[in-house]
Length: 181
Image 1 (spheres, rainbow, N blue to C red):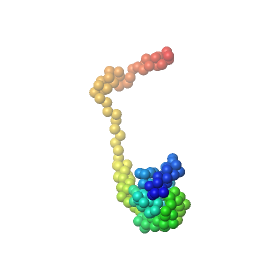
Image 2 (image 1 turned 45 degrees about the horizontal axis):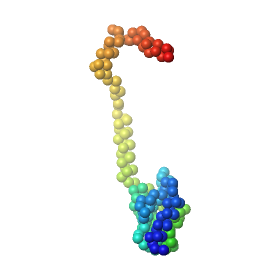
Image 3 (image 1 turned 45 degrees about the vertical axis):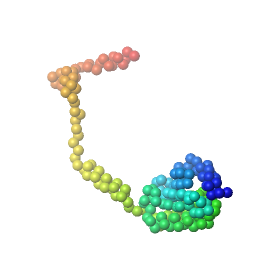
Image 4 (image 1 turned 90 degrees about the horizontal axis):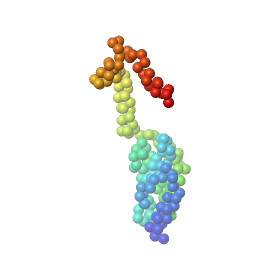
């Protein structure tokens, strides 16, 4: 079989295996992403793997450069890629994507054991928003009265007596309409 035929067969197998799986995403026929761990999990990471033209005879390109992985320190990323490349070397010449994804899922805790979240601009931005929101809530807010337009005021004064009170029975017509049905 040629490399192209092997790729087509593996692509078809991956599509059938991971159909409906939220963790798997096919970016193109030769590029894939797979999320290891839950979205809320601090130790989750996103594998980005793409095939060269001669895959599976040559190793795929493994990357952890996705935005999702910005909170992972570079040393941990390097360790993950190195261990995955060891798995690639062991499976070179065969379809290995499923094997890589499953190996990463099984060894997630081991791969992320030295992980300490990195502070990034997004985290700093959210903390500054908290400070700004705290300043706004501490300032006294004046409650605004409902502003009426001139025509609304005229109608209101036409309905009220000289004391500003509505006359007795002003809404009885609505009650009578409701009872008659």
